View 1: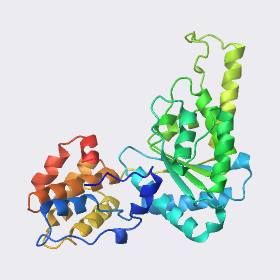
View 2 (view 1 turned 30 degrees about the vertical axis):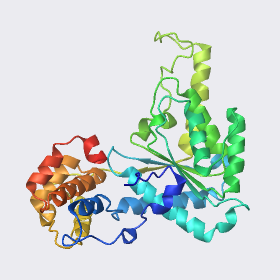
View 3 (view 1 turned 90 degrees about the vertical axis):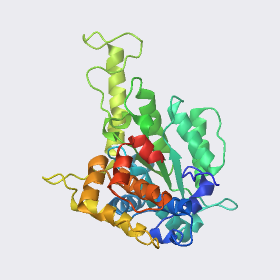
View 4 (view 1 turned 180 degrees about the horizontal axis):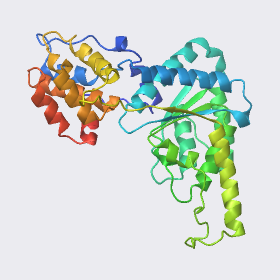
Length: 356
């Protein structure tokens, strides 16, 4: 038994597959146990998709552009899309490929005697903690340093440490903390300061970035700073000043943003999946066909793919998980995947499918 790998733990990054060729050889029903076969099935990936390619290329363009930009104009990349699209898995694969290239070709970026850490991946799901501060601490923890208590001093110290290890890219995955909520001004200002002060390129990944604090232009009713409810009357001088200051920070973040949206696939007139979804799921089934003595052909049929598509609502990430889970359940039962296995998975919640 081993603990699950985490992309937010630097020691685990070497164990994440970058390509399908990095996977272990497929098992056989003749020599391996059902649980071993199911475990291999659940670990299939990464399936090559156009999303991974787009994300990888966008990261490279971001690094190239920012390498020649002054601090105040460095761009950041926002990767948006519906939940369960497979954003996180695609971003992690893209980031790891960038990491490997930088490690092999720009080893001179690191200062002796430090370890070269060109790419940092942290979780943005920070709960109710002081948001900007916790983001800094997560980055620091990834590279193995601690920061002073004062926020401004912490930013300065972190930039020094990032230069030492040759860091160029910081990926903030699952960035739910930038969802719009009351009192977002400090968060917006702090993030603008962090993106400007740290000499790295940032990638934020999350569902709904268009409605997040990062990209929100204050409207007629800004968050009250005094605790008084809005009266709907003419704004006070203090409220107008708050609105103007916040808008300035948001404007700068919007101007510096590169936006990449991943979209779910849409059905045809008869409800059948489109070609993109079919091709992606077929690549998954192709890996299942490598298992000696295992027959996943039902998962490639029009009926099977239509069921998967309907439950996944055209989303690649959960589509892969449905096929993987149906096949793994069949393998555990020493049989082949059928309509019954797919329908059993379809009855599960999104969370249960993803966590299975």
